[in-house]
Length: 207
Image (cartoon, rainbow, N blue to C red; front, side):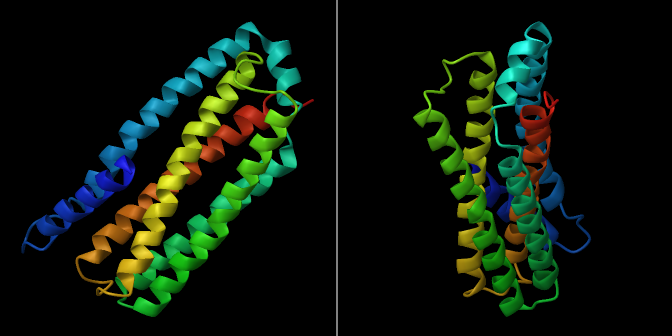
């Protein structure tokens, strides 16, 4: 919920500035500042993972080989497709097409939900086989990276649902557009983080 509140605040404040004649929109820089801070935190985790991997290459490779690459690839395609639908929603909102905006947001939400289902299945399978954060250093990073990313994913799903709801009650090319654009940028961050996490965890040790 903290992610959602931050996005709403950034979108609301930036839209107020954008409505002032002659003022340059601060909506994008505002949300980008939030995204940059989040990405830096993940960057530290990525660096920590690579440092530990250099010290335990064989262990990390063996552990990585137990992950389902096909499932990881499917999740990548799901998030990329969902991200594309968000782009289409932003374009529709910019043109003032409310129905199209809501349809694309709904499509993004439905497709994105597949990622959540797949991750829960994967977590359940690992735990059922006795694999947890305590198994070894690789799985400690696996559960931390994918777990924190999953929380960001859930926040993004809440954002999409709220935007879909508000798009039926407000003009999508009015003040709401700032929220839609900011929400879209946040969702792209979720995509980007997974695009880094997927090869690092699932492919780096592939033989």
